[in-house]
Image (cartoon, rainbow, N blue to C red):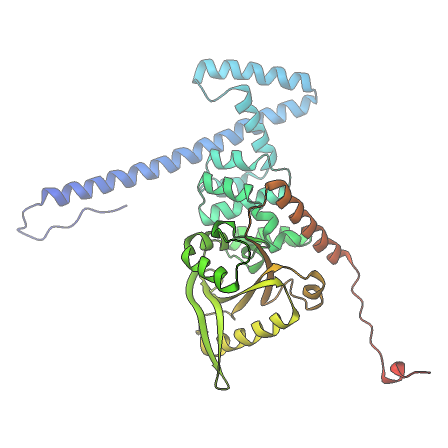
Length: 364
């Protein structure tokens, strides 16, 4: 709690300063009270939903469930006013079903309100619900921001979504326990850059200039934690100058993020170029407390086989596609589902290595 500004001996009180201090104290107290009330209301909704749900599930009869919800709604509304309609009671039941662990819910409710949860609880996939809840808690999204990220299919666009279910579970559990983000949670594919308003036939320089002009929107698309450092970062190697398109620093990862912008398909040569930049940054820019730099190659089209063969699905170099034109939600969903399916097929494919001796290579 804030304290009033101390007065020196013999000092005449300044009414304006005193009033400002008291206003600040009142504002802080009201904010704490609102947070506490919101949390208790959220927990109350969960407990109501859990209690009704357990009673109805015990009977295992749909007609009984409809009848009891309707009866409860009428009685509760008569006694406590609005907020207990049949629809709201069904929301509460779904809330308890979607978040069965009260301990986890208690932690989430310190940051997420009832309006947040209503955006999440009807997502069909459990892992998706847990991802949005934990990211919302950690990054303190507003309800509007949460809705935008769900509509923009953020989960499907993270590197994490292409992993095995057990890996996703472990990643979310680690985030819940440590509040530490990882590259798989941070990096996306594809990136949606339709806000740049680029016309057909744009160049790499046009793309870079548009990003610089609308850096705020670009940072929002990159995600929380990114800080812009430089454009066209010069690196002198063997008396020759090389230029990295964009350099960022990620506050949670504690590492530099090098971004190269490419038109057309990804090629293996892009990897070699990025490796050179990362090694230079590691030697000349990395500070004592930093992790090793990481690179992101943004291409207008991926090359899945090359990326797989070069093992760029993880590690210190990531490759992602970007779209400069708006994609309708159904088309975006189709693209993302195809990418996730390819990733899962890659995980399920047996990885065998074949080695040959010089004798094997000789003709008979």
